[in-house]
Picture 1 (cartoon, rainbow, N blue to C red):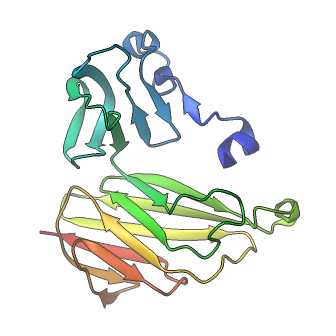
Picture 2: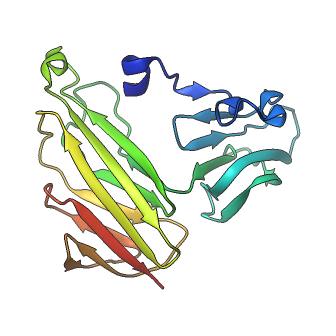
Length: 211
């Protein structure tokens, strides 16, 4: 929504936004991009048990299995009734939280940051959700820049704006890799079940070593 409100970039995007010169992407009308990092490819026919998905150039992760896939490629993806084929671009940092039924619901709910190793930039926009004070700079825009060489993962966090979110816990969840050890602003930090629990909201650099 932040990108749409700021410069008109839609949340749901046709595949040719990846490369307008790619005729294969231009012809696709049964899969799409959701935001910067998600690719959605639903089953559109009754009784379908699998479907072809065209992955654009770059690496992608199967959202459900964490399998890393290389594009460009056409793959066959199963389409069970309880889930939609969904893929995450390598280099994505996806913020997630509990379902919220209205703006004021769960303002201090824990935040999860799901990491899909690769190189890329992700954004998280937040404000109070109620007033127009964001127009005067009362918001927080967080930029996550990720670099990955196959063995070492580095995430640099930068923030802009004056808004301060309520105190909350942050859980960093790593996908598709096994973390051996991690550091938060050069200080060793515990990793349990491939997750990090972070209480300090002032951190700037997260580094993780891959097994």
